[in-house]
Length: 327
Image 1 (cartoon, rainbow, N blue to C red):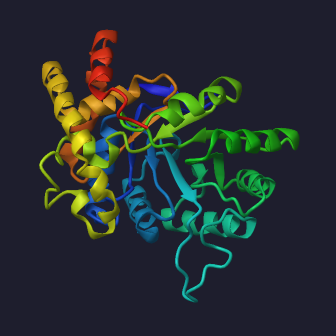
Image 2 (cartoon, rainbow, N blue to C red):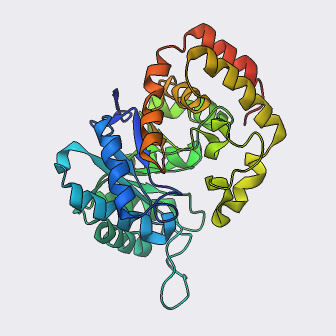
């Protein structure tokens, strides 16, 4: 395993990490969660990504139960969570706790997440989406206080614009508060401009780290959707119906088939090629991978072996295949 600095932060994260979006609470139970986390750990993974909203809190519960049973030394791994969407409450409303980053919600959300995760603190906490209705200063102060109270060690953002990230950083700098150090954007062969272009200034000026999600474009880059949606795939899940149009896009699936030829020449799978391609970007701190089976964890981790084969010539070949079919 390769370990990279999280931007300019002092901690290092494994180049490949493990995330619980979609699978935990939707496809996996506690036993499977333990097996998958153990497999990832055996491959050197030290960062486990989560969020309050994943499976409506069940994902955190499963990861928390797994961490308690695995009983790893707390210094040897990192856990994250994210806040914005909130969870349904028994009163059926969400006036101050849904789709927001206000102080009241954030201070309650971190306490509830820590209970579900059975942890004293999380290493990283993200503002899961920007909130145009809460003053940025209010959110920055709340995130600072979360860290000052020992409930999180670092904070960052997910899918924020470069302007908003810069604004939050400047507010924190002005008031001597803990600054955002990491952004979690989508990044893959089909979704690139934000990471490669919009955030360009942030890396050099702020030292922003990135923990990217969806390196396989929700599974499209595995090649499994070239002939439709398999019955046992995540694309077939009822709560993932919103992804089906993207997964069955004819033009992109044609590109995936051609990428499969590149992968075959390198002796790897299309998925491994796609993950390896993400790791070649020096601005990427870690690539968050997901899995529903232990064998998938092992297959994903082989992407690091593939990465060393991605010479400038191979990277140019990949680019020629994808062309301008990305956003």
